[in-house]
Length: 278
Picture 1 (tube, rainbow, N blue to C red):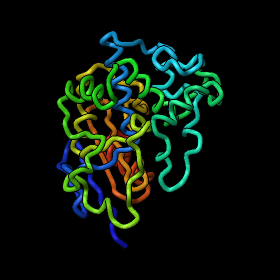
Picture 2: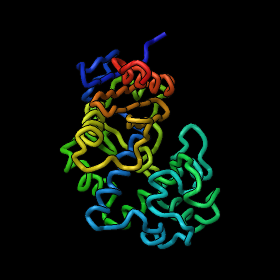
Picture 3: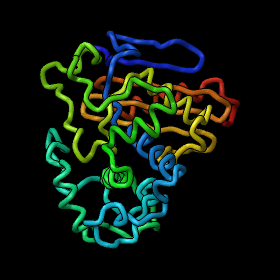
Picture 4: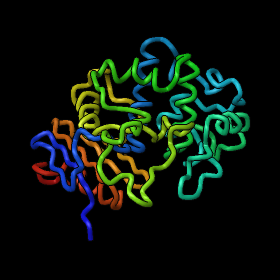
């Protein structure tokens, strides 16, 4: 059985790679994209371009009043379901383009499954709506606002929406038979469609969580005690990135394999040399 191509980076060792999965090749990062979207929200709020408690309809006028704010979308308390309606099949997000999101916004009040602010429920749909709201507030594309408010201030370059124009940039093995990536450059992009090198994921983790170059970590980060972390999974790739308050951090990216094993590997590495009982 072939081994799963894996890249591991930690604060104490150089990258460990297998089967040609290198730190400088672009890979899918799935829901780790939400970290950048949430950071963009907080940066735009700090710049006075919006308020995190703005209602969705302020920036997306086709949406009816629902009580959902940008903060609700960012911290997964919007009451929206995990996935857009009709998401299914081998390429589940292909039909969820910007026109589909526009149509959905007009009936957003019928899509919510509970009142906003009551309960946390992880929502890719919520981050698609948040990304659209940021675009409305910025008057620029998602790619442009991300570069202006997040990537350039952090001096992180190896993040892209469509790196596949030059496949030499992509991790080997990603485009074998039956291994086409999901279509995620439409409305779902702010929730999980970015590509990056494992090296860039590590730079983002360190500069956002440990060094805090852009202020406190955005609400898109998951927390477990003193640990900030986020993961991501697509059809053929998964990533885990986490950092402890004492500065230890780890990034694991795998092509293929079970995403839960990726998380377990990252958590195990993050726990190494931790004090007993921590």
